[in-house]
Each structure stands twice: as C-alpha cells, then as structure tokens.
Length: 236
Image (cartoon, rainbow, N blue to C red):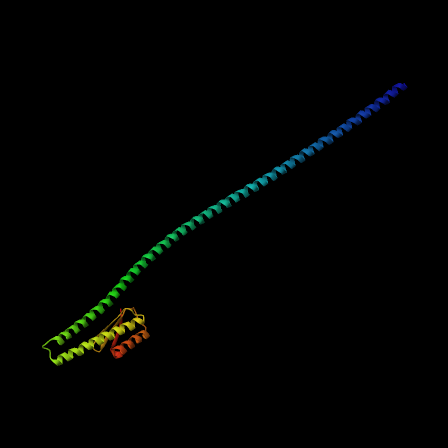
C-alpha cells in the first residue's frame, strides 16, 4: 500500500514536470514564432523602406541626370548656335569689311586717278598758257625788230618800235617776277596776262582766302605798277 502511494506521488511529480516542460516548450515556441514574425515583418518593412528609398533615389538621379543631359544639350545647342551665328556674323562682317575696303580702295584709286588727271590737266593748262603768252610776246618783239631793221622805216617809226620792244621786255620781266613771288606764297600754278591796264591772274587752287587775294594784289600792284581795281584774280 505504501509502495503504491509512493509510486503514485512519483508519477504525479513526473507528470507535473512533463506538463511544466510542455508549457515551457509551448511558451518558448510561441515566443520564438512571434519574434520570428516580428523580425520577418520588420525585415520586410525595412526592405520595403529600402526599396522605396532606392526607388526614390533612382528616380531623383534619373530626373537629375535627364535635367543635366537636357541642360547640357540645350547649352551645347545654344552655344553651337551662338558660335555658328557669331561665325556667320563674323564671316559676313569680314566679307562686308572686305567689300567696303575694296570699294573704298577702288573709290580711292578712282579718286586718285581723277585727281592726278585733274592735276595733270591744270599743269598742262598753265604750261600751255605761259608758252602761248611768251610766244605772243616773242612774235611782237620780232615784228618790231623787223621795223627797226627795215631800210624803209622812218626814224620816228624806229623810235616807236624801240620803245615797244622795251615795254614788252619790261612786262615780261615783271610778269616773271610776279609769278615767282606768287609761287613763294604757295601757289606754284599761276599765270598772269597783261592787256593794257587790265591784268588777269589765274591761280591753280579751288579757292582763295581774303588775305591770300590781298597778298597777290599787292605783288601785282607793286611789280606791274597797276591799280588794285584793274587786277582780276580767278581760280582754276
């Protein structure tokens, strides 16, 4: 009887221990599953967050990259366009400057040629005028000399011829002095014609200042013994 009770208590203790172990194992299993679920959920949430962050970063990078590419492309296109326009403008400007320079050079050449021709014409006019004037005086002197050398000439005629020859030579000398003095005033192109009391002076310039006219009048008046009102000055 005592043995049976002892065995019963022992069996109860064993059962209690087994039950306690089962409860403990169940609790541990529940805790482990819960932690695993929580960990798994946490890991899934973290992975989801990481994916979202990666997606966000990827989108931002893509947009930024596109913006940069577009901006760089736009800037390159703009710069290329500006460079092309600047090159075209520079080329056009160079061509225009070349054309302008060519036209200017052609104009200058034409102008120079015209000026040279005009200058040559003026030189020819003054040279020819002086030659014709001196030839006229030489012919007049020759005529008077023929009178002097003629046996049929009266003494009064010879005397008159001598006086005219002297007068012509005096006029020629005075004209030469006047022209030389006028040249010293800066008017190399000049010619003087004397017709009795009237004296014509032609100066090879476009215009004369009042003081320059006065200087020429003074020279003519002094050397040719002429009145100011009888001196006629013109330009050519």
